Length: 455
Image 1: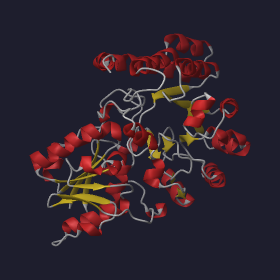
Image 2 (image 1 turned 120 degrees about the horizontal axis):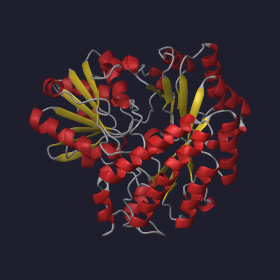
Image 3 (image 1 turned 120 degrees about the vertical axis):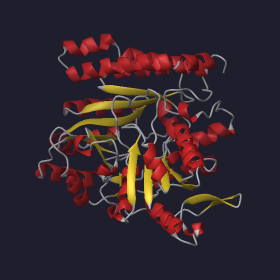
């Protein structure tokens, strides 16, 4: 079959607008289907336009979406069905939790992990007598009735997955990927209330075989950057250490970054191996320095650990991108502004101050929806930069203004000059770049601010 895979673009300015990082779902599913003999083309809309001719000639169009891109994904799906009369399959976190919404635009929705389900679904679409009830994780309509097949009880064995073939991605030179994405694990045992990872990938960690990861890393050239997509790259410290030791032994040519918990600072051997294997930056979900807010988020760390962790990682020469979430029921204007002071005083290299967002699939979404606290389901606004609920101690407008204050103060020319005088050109550049995007975001959202005044 001729199959087109699409990852829609978030057209709004957001925290990662400057750094185009490819999501892995479409390249991975495309590679699996290519290996089954299908003719596959992938379009990552962040990287380039979708070819209309490819849609015309396709038998099936797959669309993956997260919540902020759902509106765009539905628009593409509608066009593909109405204009080109093609079969549309949707997947990804958003539609996994709202399949009935997605079935207004798509023929099929694959919930949760899609690697096994997509192969079985394509097999049924090729069959003269398709039996869609045999496909796990599948939601679909038949004779006006919606069916939700049971979820596969067996999680994907990550060692059975191929290395994603980025040459399937059109209008995109895979040899010149500046940030190369690699996933080495799935799952998370922690369960923060604003996160849907457990619902998607389970509580238990699953890991890819170290040799498979090393095989993929062989493709990395000098000057390329690897981003390990894991929700917690250091979930199993011994396993991570073994991988890093092998990266050092094999003379890994690139540099890398990943997401970790701040408590990794307690293992100095690990930090030494991270630095020696060319880790330059870690993304850390700090969330807050307010003890009550950390409890509200069920974060499982303390302010003291956060402070010690940042200082220790900096001592090892590893930069830190601190991720904060503002707007918890325990937050006040004072506690949120204290977060800004902390981020500046402790010299975080870069930050994102994201507004608490009740993403479908999370406990937070369920609680806020049941209590009438969500005032919009315009999914395009669910990007962490827009208030979409009623905070407890602030008005929606006050929280939105605080969000802007935090970003403007951290990413300012004054802060850029401070680092320029220190000779820290990386932090200087990041602040100037941040300033540029904040200005652009402000222009884009004048109407949003006006509407918030009426909420």
